[in-house]
Each structure stands twice: as C-alpha cells, then as structure tokens.
Length: 343
Image (tube, one colour):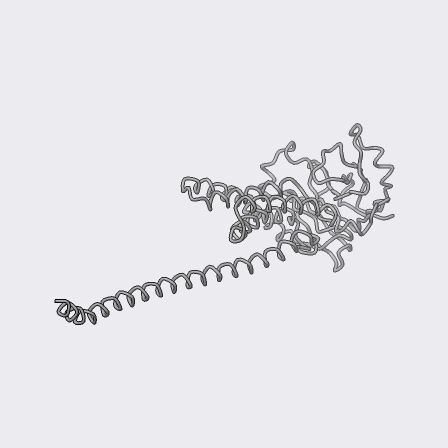
C-alpha cells in the first residue's frame, strides 16, 4: 500500500510542479508589471519635479528683475508702468503657489509667499522702486485664489473664478489708458517723462530734440470733453513725472520757459507724493503771453507758501510737475520750451 501511494504521488508530482510553476510565473509577471508601473509613475513624478524646479528658477529670476529693476528701465516710455506692475502681482503669486506646492506643504507655501511679498515691498524702498499696500493686496488675492482653486472641495472653485475675474478687471482696464499712451505719444521734456493724457488737450511736437518745443492744444471738438462739467475737470494741460531722482538729488530751483497764443496764467503744480491734495502742492501762477517767458522759482521759498497747515513738504521727494490752464482760459494753446529742476 505504501508502495502504491508512492507510485501515484510520483505520477502527480510533475502536475503539481507545473501548477506551482504556473502560479509562480503568474505572480512574477504581475509583480513585474506592478513594479514597471511604479517605476513609470516615479519617473513621471520625477519629470514633473524637474519641470516645476525649472519653472521655479525662471520665476525667481524673472520676478527679481521685475521687482528690483528701476521701472523706467523696464518700461522707459510708458505712462502707466505703475498700473502694469500692480496688475502683474496677481498672476505671479498665483503661478508661484502651484509651483511651490510641488515641493513643500500648503502651510509652508503660504508662509513663504506672504513673507516674500512683504519682504520685496520693504526692499523696494531701498532700491528706488515704490512700494504700496495695493501690491500686497493684489498678490494676496492671487494667493487666496490659488489656494481655493487647488482645494479638493469643488464648491470653492466658483469663488476662485470670481476672484480671478475681479483681479483681471483692473489690468484689463489699463488697456484704455495704454491707448492714450500710444495716441498721445511724444518724447520726454528734459528731466521729465513724456506727459500723461488729459481729456482736454492734444500734443504737437515741433523740433527734433525733446526740449525744443511742445505745444499743448485745447481740444474743443472732443465730445468727451463736452460731457464734462467745470466741477469735474478744473484744468486742461499735463502732468509730467521725474525721470529719475538721481538726476537732481534735492532740487533747489525750478526753471521753466513757456508761452501761449493769448495772455493767460499758466498753473504750475509741484508734488512731493503720488496723489496729493491741492493744499499739499506747491502752486505757482506763471503769466505767459505770445512771447517766450522764462522764470526760475526757488523751491524753498515756494514751500513756505504751501497753504496746508502743518504739512511738511518733502523737497527731496518731488515726484512730478503739473502744467495746466483753467477750462475758461482765453488761450487755446500753450507751449513749453523748457522745464527742469536745478541746484
């Protein structure tokens, strides 16, 4: 009986061997396929990491250039460079969030980005660039939108979409200003950038050099001007920003040469901040006629005339000069031959 059992067992052994071998081969094949997929997935993840690292490198270089290079170097002929730079904060932070999330956690990403935004604004104070709370607000909104959009809760995504649209309304509106930038394009006036557009005038260039002669024409046929009341538009003319503060560190005098087609007073406004009130400006009236009139004004003397009580006019922070005439002025044109700050 024992021999008979041994005989049948010997007959079944090849079958058992083949069955076990088949199972082992199947398991090895499945394990190999699983390892292959795991390896392929790891390779894809590694590729994503490399791409994210490259994008991060490009972002850091690009944002550093945008943040610390003087605005007049990047956009030398744009009147609205401040508005353009403000609008770039949203997409920059929005993209940066998604890139950083490939490497670090959400909390660390938020802390790092907010620290970077605030640090950049502080550093800009020492690099000749202006900093503002608007930059922080727009950048923070971009961060909030990115966080919501990347969250798993789908109900938040419409909120992110609304935030994105709201933030892009602002830079989209700048296109209308840029239209005026190109239409009213004319060269710089000495130490000043080319003037900004106003509803009530057109600019005509006479001569090849920037300071040769710039004529400002009152545009009576402008339909938009006809819809504006005196209370809404007190003056027609131009305001011009200083090209660089380094040209004249602390200006002592302001020199101007001008004329008009009729006798009139040219209104001169000198500002030491971005959006001052009337009483926080130096206000000068220059009598002009058909003949070229030149005059030099001492800044220190004019500061004493600033009407705003206890307002400390910063002579070292003069930002722009306005050259205007009233809406009821008899003159239809006025001409600027020269305008500059001197020591």
